[in-house]
Image (cartoon, helix red, strand yellow):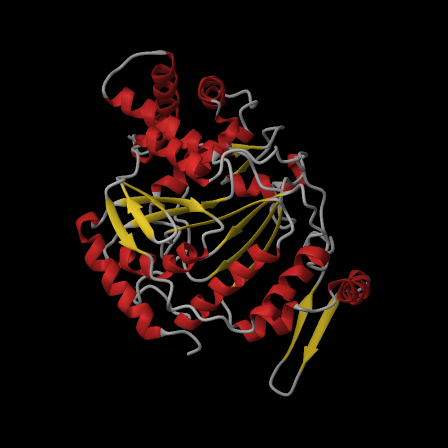
Length: 420
């Protein structure tokens, strides 16, 4: 293994001892995306927390933490509601929750309690709830083909995304789950940290974040509740002009709490291993309607990405809001060899193949060990969709980021005050 597995295991043991008092709690982790020691310390930190049956929601941000501040405001109003304080905001939140729970049968209200543990960090330590200090342990990580990884990232951002400096970019990575959870080699997960970090460093955008949260083994399990709440609020913000009771009530709540601070990225990249986000309660019980109400999305990601294979895409009419690229956890060597290529040259080859497929009824595949055919004509006599090259870039909404405002000390102080 190219990494120091002993240092990793020692760090996991250290964190398990340090976090034992928070067993089975929910953590919100927020710190500066430029804190590299903190980023690599998240690997053993998350393994230890997951061994203790904790849930983590991690947000590494660059300047203004608008969506986190909006979450804090929602939690503050929910706390007031729990104390039976009646005011315009608590009444609006209660009415929205009750409208959803007509179908969700009381389960929706359960995603609103604030996390038990708030984690910030400085250059050396994680700080839990402002009073527990735990050392960072990034020593397990060793750089491997680092320069080539950075070059690969530059190629992807330039040729695949055609990325501009004024875009808002989100990058995702996997936290480390317990050994009994994962099937891929642990080294592949470690490699994904190197890939995610170099994608961040090579990204030319001025506004970029990194995020992750605890996975579930199936889509049938309840999701990590901070991510579940965030996804619901973003999805409803995208749908707040829909003329239905639940979205009318959300529209009133959004205006009172300024929930338009939940915004989509214009480009997203993530590395993903085993696991799922869990079931999305609002999507399963209410759904997110297309503007013509002929269909519903089961999650906000459908509205945001609008993949060509989703049936709702054909009738939604709004167009995608974000470009997305992703990779499975895989060895660094394979990632570099497969992605540091001339993507525009590959597109020309792909386009020629697609043109040939679109003129054909069947594809015959033969090798030494296999022989089969792929039918291209469906039962209704229409032609199956031949997907374009992955280098194609669709239209998306872009926003010019505001001037850089509060830095780490400012927003950490602000969020700590909101959480207290």
